[in-house]
Length: 77
Image (tube, rainbow, N blue to C red; front, side, top):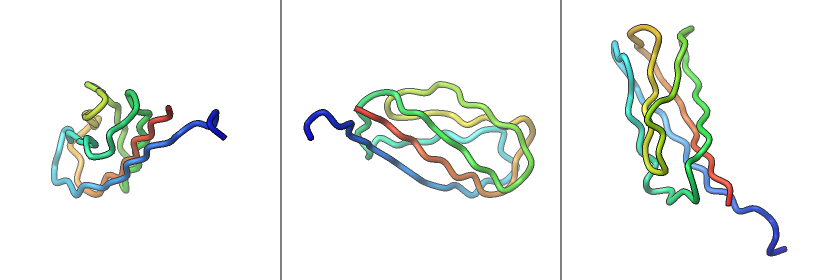
């Protein structure tokens, strides 16, 4: 079973108040490479990712956002 992929997953949530963006840090997960990141918000707002690295990323919002944002970073070796 040595050929099977290995996964590293980091999930977290942030409470935001009138934020244009949030910087996220998943250093503790020791990702294998730059991860794929999924985002869920509890309000109807558009978002996009920027400055994605092996340890951090920024979630940008289309308008000032108040609420909970949940994200998951997934890295496959």
